Structure formats: C-alpha cells, structure tokens
Image (cartoon, rainbow, N blue to C red; front, side, top):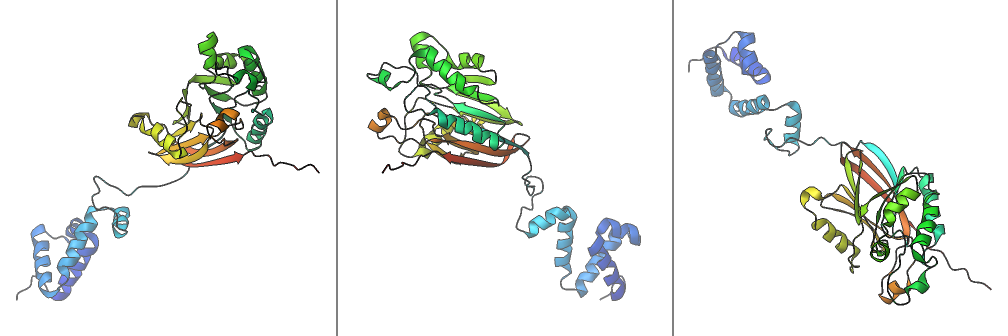
Length: 324
C-alpha cells in the first residue's frame, strides 16, 4: 500500500481538516482539492473511524454552534424550516380591574361591592376598569319585575349608576348588556352612550361586544344573550369556537352569566367576569347561582403577544352574624 505521505503527515493533515474544515485546510496548508482528497482516501485505509469523523465534520460545517446544541438536545436538523424557539417572558406590564353585571337599580345590587372593587383596583395599581355589560337592571315587562327595583325608570337608574362610576378616578371601558338594552326597546335610550357623556372617564365600546388594545394585544369585552350552561367552561368554549381564527382576540372578558372562571382556549386568555349583583329571586327560581366578586388582572405583553397573565379573583361573600 503506497501512501501519499507518511502516516504521521496523514494524521497531521487530517486532524487539521477535521478541526477546521476543507476550505481552511486547503488554504492554510496549500493543498489542492485533489491532493486533499488523496489524503482523505489514504487516511481512511489506516484509520477505521475516519468516515464517521468525516460525516460529523460535514454536519458541523452545515450548522451553527447554536443549531448543533439544539440537535444534541433532540431539536430539528432542518435549519431552513424549523429553528429552535427563543423564549423570553419580558413584556410591558399592565394591570386592570374587571367588573361586570352590576344590575344597578336592582334590590340585590349592593353599591358597597362596586366601591370595594374600585378601592382594591386603586390599591393594586389598576390602570383602568372594564365592564362587560348589564350596568343597570333595566326594566322589563316581566310580571313583578317592578317590585325588584330600587330605582324606577331609565333616568333614575342612569343617574344612580353614573354617580357611582364617577367615584372611580381611572378610565372605564364598557359595553352594554341585554338588561341595558331594554331601555332601547322601551324608550329608544342608549344607556352606554349616555353614561359616557355623563362620566368623564368612561368610554362606551359598543353593544354586546367591544374591543380595546394593550401594547398591540386585542382585549375583547363580550356579553351575549345566551343562557347558562351546566359547565361554565362550555359557554366560553362555544364563544371562542364561533369566531373565525383571525377574529379570536388575545384576551376575552365575558359577562352575562354571573359566573367566574379563567382558562386558555385556542390561545385566547378567557375570563368569565362574575357579577356584582347577588343571586336574584329569578335566578334562584332557575337554579342559577351567582359568583359575586371581581377580578384584578396583571398581564405582560410584548408587541401584541401575551407573555404571561395573572388573573386574581376577589370573592365577595359576607358571613352571617348570629345575634344572641
């Protein structure tokens, strides 16, 4: 077997080749492609593991150090289509207060609960508050409904809740609900628009649905006129499933059912907002419980992407005090 060079020289050249690759080896050692090819063939005859090393070298020449580390950890080896994800959880942080379904003007609405939510929002640094509908109780044609009201008629309910909302010093983003829209049907009065005129820091976002944006992330308020489901999550899933993929918001806050819950559905952070109205006689007759309370939500957002979310539910339940 005649070699192109001594075994020592072969090992020296191939060691350099395995460490630096073909281009640098040819340049630094002054070898032609043909000569380096002969070195490789001869070296393969005296070293059994040369081909394995050569294959590893070819892999090394095709990928960056970061990609090689990803491959070693079980990642993809196709750099053109799938690169290792770079994860970070930094973002612009926001805090906001979530309230819904006040039903102001109903005997089971307790204004202390609303003012308590405002106070806690200030304490926790909330930048604004959202209301997902049913700001007032409204007036229906249901028999006996008038006897459940503390404030009769559109003007009194509007003034009452307006006086309460003005006590909150931050912006209020709100939509109306089916109870508020009874005034549209009965008197042609748009409560949300009129409240926005009455309360300087309030903004009416729309009937039943409204949208605002936080650092590029879409936050949608939702009310609806559907009923309660046995499982709170079922209603939330059906709301999100009914939206086209490009219509699904980053965060959705749903009112109407007086239920509280948080979960992620199709990448959307979904909050069922609960209520600030206690269980009414009508709800009791329908075997519907009320989750009374409010949320304070902290969220980090970067360029429209929710990095993390921390929703905290504040449950309001007064203990009965026995009188001796």
